Length: 601
Image (cartoon, rainbow, N blue to C red; front, side, top):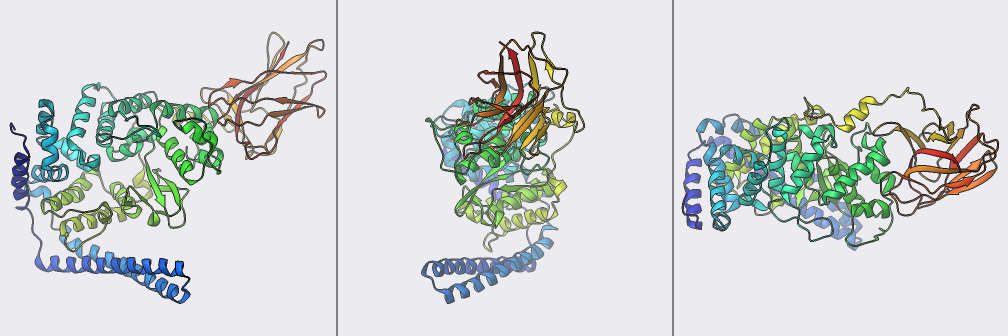
């Protein structure tokens, strides 16, 4: 290539499109049956949408008779759509069985056509003529089947900025070492390039997210074992949704450190539907948000709470901090968290209706979940050959979706696009819970995986430790009595030892002092606690000594780090028991305690 004007790319697209049209044809009878089925679906869809609009109008006007009729029609046309899509699959199967685009030696032309169509000749020309390097990058892209395949298989470049995606991918890969992480890093690099090839900004700021820095953040976190065990095994399509958080890198790091300090039981919860995101339930209070500074941060969301929006923001944030793919979910009057699990994609905090009432960036939830299932129900190569390439052929035939909302529906005027959707549906129906698992030989042992493996449910409580100077260290998890594990939760601590999590103001624990522990009667003692908190507003920790004397320990806001409380002077006398508790309050959330220290003054 030497001339990168718009005409050059138009001519190239025309040539490649002509090559694509030399590909397979469809038997006329089979074609007619499939088009008829697609038309039936479209008719039912339009009728359902009309019935839905009528229903909403009747609800607003209070027309009970009209509402009943509209509901009946809505149900009727919903069933008609379901019947029609079954017919579409049925009539598509004999066509799909006869088509294998890999047999026609059209792969390069199909890939080029799809990318040229989506990026547009005008867009490529503008990018290529910005610099000689850009022109070389476009030339390399359009002659590299492997890179074009990977881009399209992973969902294409955001906003179709394929030129800039190629540039970012090339720059990131130039700095990658060829070590045991190289295969994973190539996928992360492609994900970062495809996501951040167009401007995206950090939460509540105008600061642009840098693709190279985002890659560096997750590459280092993965190398250090800080991410979820499944992260090693994701596909590029999934990596995109794992790393495209709007959080600054330091907040992503804080999120991991904070949860592993404050609530390791949430970072390792066995019910993986709620792993990480369960913290929204326990700590992001449902209330008007309390912002304490500008720009807003995810630390403030956790501390200050919020309603549907902030709670969904935080749920997505904390999942992505650990490298879990998420898909933002908007529902009527609600925001939620779509997320990957080893048993399939789920929605946290959903309204009844789940994927059927969800959307994100104008994409319907049902379209997304079918795509996610299909990608798990088939191998990547099968999905590429039987779904992606059919989509490329649709591009060659100028079967363009005018709006993203149209992408998930068959259309009698877009036969190849509709056949691609039917093949996707067939694969989606093949998916099982096991299909979504991402396991295999790893390149690193994650800290979470190691933590889970080392949990010993039968391990005895750690003993009290008497210091040489007469002090006493009481492991917080070694309590004698509590008001139940749902209120006072002992856990192994990341990095060793144990810790206690007091869930709320109803929680209490008591400690019996061993008989062999004695105190120096002529000295006062100072009591302090090693604590970790995540809320600005804290209730003091109250102490009853032997059921008599009462003390109050002020709890600091530690922002997820471990910190000693200010020591409180107490009288020990013939000390035999300690009871710690807090007053119930709307602002009394969890507190993690590693140990208490009694030290002579």
